[in-house]
Every structure is written in structure tokens, then in C-alpha cells.
Image 1 (cartoon, rainbow, N blue to C red):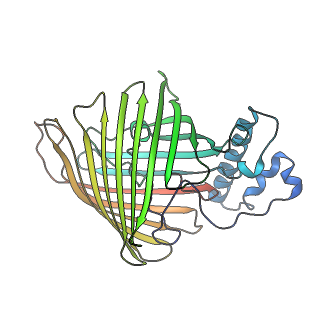
Image 2: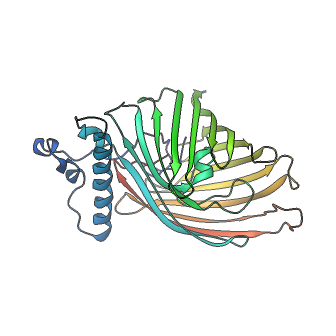
Image 3: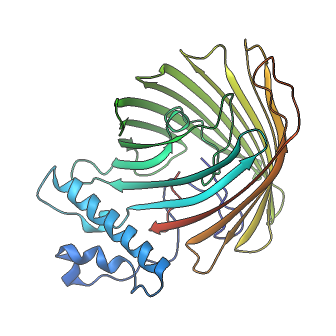
Length: 340
């Protein structure tokens, strides 16, 4: 999926992390566990030390986990471990103040298969499993009815091709780390096509199962058009159905991405959501403005959000204006990956 990145204003993002050249690793380090320590230069500030701890800890975890399946260690692959951690708060007049702490780590497991990876993250379970997450993951975004979903810790294994071709098949299995355990599985197929030089279309179909929700499916369609080097327009449509829902839940969003510099960009959004066969078919609509800025150091990102929406999820509710505001700080670690 494309996400909003600020390495060069607005750019496309795949599961392959991007960033500056990696530091050189000595031959001595390659033959021992301290290869993970040399992934990050010497840390001076508190934030640098925190990021170094996250990076080396994720690398060592990948090496330990992969080592359970064989004797050979692939340190170059463990260096591909990447992730992000964010802390922030979202306030809306409808929901009140909602503080959030989220993190995601993706680790390769070459001992078994180069296409296999492990995932651990504190995310919204239903949105993650059903592949209905918003593009902006630092703060929650209500896309369907009900209250904003609480975060939970998930661990899992994923299978995907090493090279993305535009016809890609992925499989994930995992479990919620909380009693009672809630296992899940999902598979998705994505098609990406470019046409007329300025358009990119993405279509993805996901089929999933989780013990608490049963079976379901999510259809997602995204159309991008580049207007210039500084502007990009995106339309996205989403439809989800599960055994627990009454009718199909749907959500559509139009976004204008505007790049001010290599570090700062804006997203102007209009969104509408609803649910078929619900007592209130049109559950929400509104507009928001999101600013993303890379700070110094560049692996630290500030996200600001402001907007208004008009929710009505129950028939007895009155639809009225609900302002929203949010702020989050996101730290990327590992190979500067933006984990999506």
C-alpha cells in the first residue's frame, strides 16, 4: 500500500524500507553477535540511545528467533529488521481524549525461507487483521461505526515474495497476546498497474479469519494521479464484510498531498463512511488536514492533525459537528523502514 512519507515530500512506499546508506560492518562483527551493535553509530542524546536500543534489540531478536530453526546465522538479513514506535493523542468532541502508544517491528527469518518474516506490534487488532487500517498509522482513524478501537499486542508470521512484481500474494498468521488468546489468519492478493504515465491503480482483496470475529473479506481500491512534483491526488475506497457485521461496511477518502520541502508535506482529506443494512446507512463524513514533518534527526517524524466530522452511528443520536485534533511523534528504527 502507498503511505504518506517525507523522505522527499510525497513518495510511494512498499514493504521494502528506504533510507540513507547503511553503516559499514567489520568482518569481526560479522562473525559474532556484536554485528547488531554496529548497525547504529554511537548514540549521544537520549533519543539516539533509545533508537539504538530498539534497533539492536530488534536485530538480536531476529537472530535469536531465526536461530531456533537452524545453526547458520544470516546477519545481513537480520540487519533488514525495521520498525517504528509512536506516541500521541487524538481528541474529538465525540470521543474525547484518546492517548495512544503504537509500535511495529518486522523481522526476516532466512533460516526457514527468505520469503518468511515475523511481526510484532501494538496495533488495532480488527483493523490490522482485516486489512482496513488507515494510511496514517501513528494516530487512529475511525473508518467504520463504533468507538475507536483499542490497541492490543499481536505476534505473527508472514509470507510474501522477496520482490514485489505488481501481482503479489501474501499470507499472515498470528495471535493476540492477551487472555483469552485470539488467533487470526489472513491472505491477500494485490494488483498494481501504472497507465498514462501519471496514474497508478492498486486493487487488493483480503480474506481473513479471527476467532472472535469469524470469517470476513475486505476489498480495497486506490487510484493515484501525479499532478506535479509537489502535488499528488489519491482516491481510496474500502469495503469490509464479516460474519459479525450487518451488511457491508464501506469507507471512501479523497486526499490531496502537497509537498512543501523534502521534510514537510500536507494531506488535505475528505472522507465518507457508512454501513449497508444499518439503521443509519451514512455513519460519518468530514474533512481533515494532516501535517507530517521530518525533524532533526530525520528518523523522527512529527504528525499534526486537525479537522471536523459529523458522526451518527445510532438512530437515536443527533448528527452534529465534532472537531478533532491530534499530535504524534514517530521514531523509525532499523533500516529506516516505514512499516506498512
